[in-house]
Structures are given as C-alpha cells and as structure tokens.
Length: 511
Image (cartoon, rainbow, N blue to C red; front, side, top):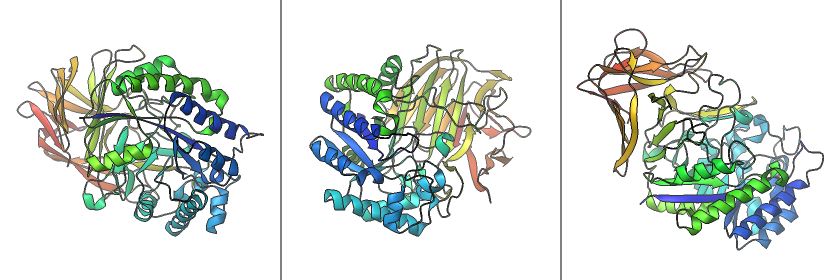
C-alpha cells in the first residue's frame, strides 16, 4: 500500500548579512515552532552551524524537545571553517556564494574535516549525534562519508531547479525519496554496490505541471519558483494553489509514496511567511485528522523507507486537474533506471516532455575537484529535455505523429499494472511505463519525433536502426557517452532523430 507522507521541516540560520538587523531570525524560529505546537505537529529542525553555536537556538530546541527532532543544515559558514582549521573565503560569516557556502568548494579532505566538526559540535551541545541532516545541494562523496561515519536515518536536498541561487539540480527523482548513487547525488543508484544506503528526500513541493517550465526557452537565466514554500504568492502563499497541490499530490495513489515538505528557513522572516504557513498547516492538520495524510518527522520517514525498500522504488505523480484551469495534465514516473514526464496540453496535444537516464558511472560536477565558480550543478543524462532544449518558440520533446501530423489525445487515463508499472491511455497513443522499459503504442505508420532547438549541449550523435549514440557535453572536458537503445521500433535513417513504430509499438530499453 502506498503512503501519503508530509514532513514539517524548518531550518534555522544564525545570521543574515543582507539585513541591517538580523534579530528577526530568532523570533521567526520561535514563531515557527510555536505554530507547529499549536497545530500539534512533531517537526524536524535543522540547525546551520552558526545557529547551533548560539545558546538561544539550543535553548529553543530544548524548550520544544518533546515536539521536535533536531539535525544539521550543512551549508558551510565561517565558524565551522574556523573549527575545522580551514580558511573562510566568504564575505560574511554566512555567505550564499557557491565557492564558499557548499561542500564542493572544498577538497575531499577538507569536506571530511567540515563534516566531523559539524557532527562533533552538535554532539558536544546535545549529547548525541544527529540522525537527520539536509542541504540545498551536496556532493555524493560527502554524503557517502557522512553515512558511513554517522549512520543517518534520512537526508533532504532541494527539488529540481535550474540555476536558482547558483545551484542546478536537474533530472533527478521529481519528489519523494530515493537512494543516491555514490557518484551523483541526484541520480538513484542503478546497482546496489554503487548505492549510498541513506534515503534522500526532495524538498519544497514543486508544482508537478508548472515548476518544470518556469523560464522555458531561457535556461541561462535562473529558474523561477512555483513550490509549496509559503513565501511565494503564486505557489505556497496562495490558498487556491495549496488546495490544488494537496488534492493532486495526495489524492491519487502513487506507486510507492506521495511526499511533501512543509516549512521554510527563517531567513525569509515571519512577516513574509507567518500567515501563509499558518494557512498551510491548518489545511495539513485537516488532512491528517481525516486520515488522508501521515505527518511524520524526517527520521521517521527515512526509517520507514529503509525498512520497506532495499533500492529505489518506482514511483509516480499523476496530475489531472490544472490549478490554473488551462486543461494541462501531467504524469511523472521514475525508477532507478530513468525518469519520464508525459504531458497533455489543454489543446489535447500529448508528448514526452522530459526523459532522463540514470547511470552509476556519470559523476556530478565537482565530485572530485574543487569549485571556484559561483555556481555548481548535478545533472542526469538527457534523452529529451523540454526545458533545456527549448528556445525561440520551439518546445522540445518527443512528439507522437502520423504522416507528419500530431496525434491528439482523447483522454489521459492512468492505471497501475503492478507495484512498479503504469499504463497511461491517451486514446490513439498508449504509454506503458516499467522500471526498465518505456513502451509507446501508436497507430500503424506512427512515429516519435525528437523536437529541439539548436542550443548548446544537445546530446544526439550517430544512430543505427536500433540505437543512438549520445553524450552529455555540458561540463568542461570530455563528454560522457551513453546509448539509447530500442527493443522495438526503428530510428529514422536520415535527418533529425525520429523513431518509427514496429508492429504498432516503440519500446525503449532503459536498464
């Protein structure tokens, strides 16, 4: 049976250099915990090291000791560097710039020292090692080191985003939990020997229809935000949006679990987040009381995940009602081998908006080297990327056509075949999603056309009837090679890639 899980996770920083007076940070933390108490939620608190070192934050955590679990928020700050005997390169005690704030800004030996000082510092103040931690982005080397040394129950990271605050996480599990690869934080491990045995959960509750396309056609710009975060008026700050998110995220049974993280960092201030966060927790309380959602701490969620799954399970998010009333519909599916998004527009056009492959050999940026830039990234391997490969009015995707004309969708009906498989019936086109295969049933003469703009980083190479050579070329240095294989169907012999049906079907072999 699938789970509907919500975590309330608030994380606290100890300084805010962008404000003349940052005393609002502590009062915001106080108000967040008081609000959780008011609605009866046990919550997770993650302390950045500068907050951990302040007596008032430790006293606050002790005041609510029976109602919270406390862990670490692992952005790097000056006091942590000093404890580890390292040089701080930031402009302020906490600096949001990537080349000092994130673990990739340090050598692997320095990362170990920073981790040890953070965990030992926590233990010195609380008398035990934390069982949960989080950060917007982390390198897989550091996460593996943390897990081997401290045996966490769960970790949390940012949802997919492109360039926001200098960080790109793109192509991973769209929401919920997974076991990451030892070489790439955002990709599930394909093989057990390459798996970090720590459940990682995606934060912030991204809109399953609209978050992906924010900034479409301009990937060089930072992506906007349509998430559950209460500070955003077109997302979690809107009562209508929250109602629709709860209904769509939790209203249909996923393959393994539906998940969302509620809460916000104290940097935004209570004036900005207080009222919408109250609105959200009131609605969550009603769902919990009705038995529709379980509210768990992050560690409880991680332990349940670990006790149930030895490897990343297949999962899905089906969205049938468009909160903007444009008639758009979406299905996200992922397994340890790939993720795919199938999208149906309000004009009944249907296409594969996103298809990303997972490969244990593909390393995230700065896994083994040091970042001196003001940005860092972690990607999966794209087959089609509707965000990054779109530009100039061209909307990238894999489009079903017949005789050069789009095949329209007369419906968008999804059913579960088994615990890891779905069937999506769109009328003349039917998609069957299995953990290692993607099948598309088409009319005789049907074809899938690769549509993309002429943008940097396209992965397409030479192809034969049954396979296409591809390469990920966004990092400096050598491109990473991979292959897209057909079990059924044929790649077109000339021009831009396309796949023709064979006996009424196309089957991508994705393991």
